[in-house]
Image 1 (cartoon, rainbow, N blue to C red):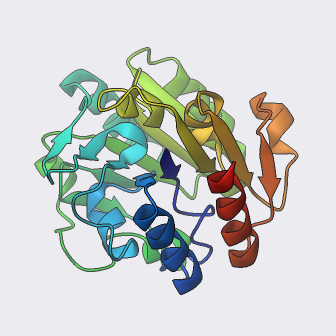
Image 2 (cartoon, rainbow, N blue to C red):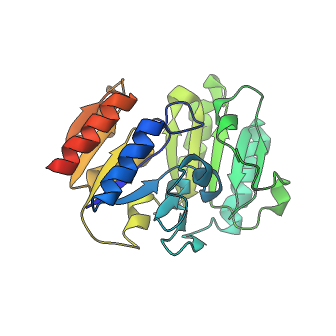
Amino acid sequence: MRFIFDVDGTISFNGTKISDAIILKLKEIEQNGAEVSFASARPIRDLIPIIPGFEAEHLLIGGNGAIVQSPNNDIRVTQPMDETTFSTIKNLIDEYSLDYVIDDIWNYSAKIKAGNKILKQLDPSGLAENTNMKNIKSPIKIILVNIVAEKYDEVLSSLKGITTLNVIEHSGESSIDITTAGVNKFTTLRQYTDEKYIAFGNDSNDLELLKNAKKSIWVDGENDRLSYLDLKPDFIVPATDNDLVEIIDLVNEN
């Protein structure tokens, strides 16, 4: 059976590492015959440093499905944004003076105020270059961050009016994730395998992956978003290392 894990908020609770207990459990179930994969909002560049022991020869889905590393370690973009769409978003960034992270295949362009938690996750191993926005040639994913409350709905409405985009809102975090329309973690997974799987997630960008799983596990101390997302997971567990280890054992045995 394949196990697919989101990372931030699902198996990593500080944005910088996954606990030794969870890493050991993932290695254990893999040794016992399970396949372990990861599906994250992080691009491959930022996913690799946080999954020690799994960074090679595993299916790694990054950028909410926009980029993928296959088990033979080839990295490819599933569908970059077209030039017209990218220009429209850049104009929106200028109009509202938005903070952002724009991911290319490997490098990125970012403007983020100090103190934002995303900085802990952005190229933590210094593998890439923070370049000027004009140097981004194949934008795969854009995060707009620190959007002021009174402008959030306005920015969101403008983005949702662009039919070539997939827009994921995070109003509680004052941020918005953007990829090309039709791209998500589940659609990218299906390009590599049609087998049944067990999925772990904690946010709206995990929705399709969880809805299509044989078993779905929602990891969160706050479950009021489930009704908003119209999601009924098989299991709901608190976001703690011990609870994660226990539920991994439980679903692996049944």
